Length: 401
Image 1 (cartoon, helix red, strand yellow):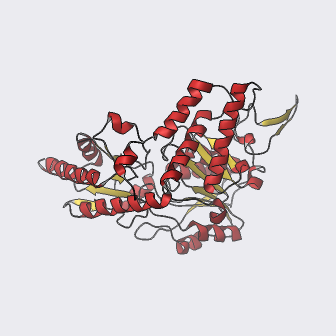
Image 2 (image 1 turned 120 degrees about the vertical axis):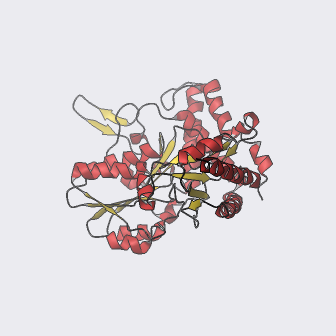
Image 3 (image 1 turned 180 degrees about the horizontal axis):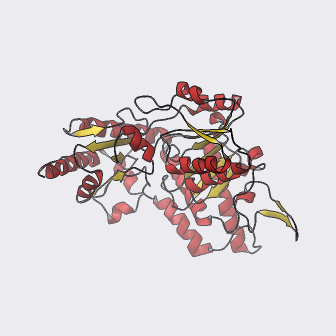
């Protein structure tokens, strides 16, 4: 069982903001002390570049950086050669899309969905425009879910790419990715998975999922911002073109030609995100020390409690009552979400308002924007009670007008 009071001692922000009611972890989680300390140690005790130096500080920094790669690989059951450190999920997904600009052509089809975060959708929309390929959307259920049946309706012999979310950042629905991947591979299509919302909440096994590429971010996993991970199958990584060119990623350079190193270094041009990788590795250690099973049990219980209480509030519309991830998308009738979010902040309740970088979801729901409350391991029932009281107070205040 999770002891929230004990958990909160691991997050320094509660020392400076003891009354914080934080329900925006789907955007960016709070940062754990273990990760902060490792980043601080790098900058205070090392602060040098990796791979290039032969002196002790460079050796130690390189050892920490490459240990982080090994740790991430173990975390998702990959090989360390298959782990590329990026600036985040966005840069990882863009890297893959740029690589396939060289192979896509008119008539090819790219399957995606209306549930995508813009970082999963837009790189492929632009790739389709540049190459003449066609963007195809999986039909969603009335509830807004991706299903295997819906995927089968759009999968064809022309399908070359499937770029899809593992868990929707707005609706919290889990995609049946294993069966979708199996079907896509029967057509020799490449599957790219946006795991930004799943990696903080569930164990990922890339061998079991069998996706070709997978991306997630450190800042949603109690770790630093500015670091992310791209997993890719080793064979594919060594076949595609690098996204950036510069130092460290080259093998041989002459006046007229260049050859590149194998993955992962061929995709880490220049100075990499050293401190971020080290901090992410520490965050992964923390997640594993708590345990996904206990985390899931706790967040599920808090999610269901909050959902039950919110459903009792008159004038509230909830769009995802069966969400798989601990996230609730809702609106208060007749009041703009940003007005509600501003009012909630006056009671130290932090929620997200807007389209959540997923405008197609808002269009599917038939609204301009929504409020989103997202839960993690440091939330408890008291948070929920304050949240509900604040929502009612905000609703009543705006009803005066």
